[in-house]
Length: 134
Image (cartoon, rainbow, N blue to C red; front, top):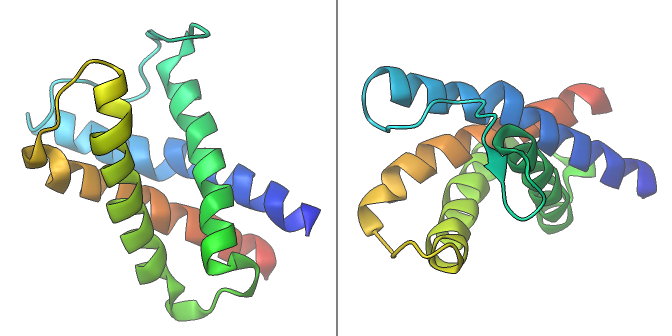
């Protein structure tokens, strides 16, 4: 079980770097969002680079997804479940919990952007877990 949890954390961490942030980059390149990927700006409260903070939380969410969907037994068709989990759960938590804690309001207009970025993370996490389980 411990091995599966470590795998889920590492998969979620790497999915931020390899899937989430590239989608952020594409959205930034097309002028959809104002911020670039792989930001080195310090993230509160520890002052670590924003990309590292996002990757750490991606790892934590990888654990959550592993526990919710039992990814150690994931089937070939599970990519869409992982995409929906990332797109919906992570985006809603960001919109309804994280943004208000950071003093930002709740703006439903950002849901489609969050869905794309976080859905890519979910699919990427699933792909890493699936590849390493083979």
